[in-house]
Amino acid sequence: MILKRICCIAAALAIVVPSFAGINRNDVKEIADRVADWQIANFNNVSYTGKKRAPLDWANGALFRGMVEWSAKTGYQPAEDFVMNIAKTHDWHMARRLYHADDICVGQAFLLLYEKYKDPVMLQYVKERADSVIDFRSHVAMDIHVKDGQERWCWCDALFMAPPVYSMLT
Image (tube, rainbow, N blue to C red):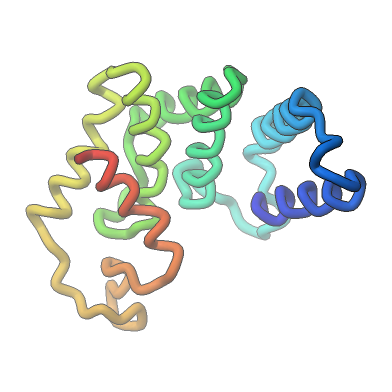
């Protein structure tokens, strides 16, 4: 849903703005900052899904990474503060499923913050999860339809979720 909104905003801008030469960098930053503010203000409003989304859900992991990167690129501190507060609230833990890529995704934002602040607590649980995955490898078949099939990454976006965490740890 977040991606849908971003695409709609981008499409609207493409229609309104006849050429990229006329785009003012400061105007784009202001609009994007407002989008970030809206995301922060509406973080818990997931009524459109018909179900509650866990704070460490994979979709939020993508949001958190984007917020941290936006803050790093533009200096927009509320975006980073938002992620930092959620991470602290959850003691820098990821969601519970050991192998599931969805539950590893939030580690991307945690590691970006670790790179900036070098606080070991930001790294600790992400590293422990990676070590556990190595030490206790899954032996489930590479088939998403078998029992516990999601221990193995048999769906396309899993490659966005977990591998970046592991590569950032190297």
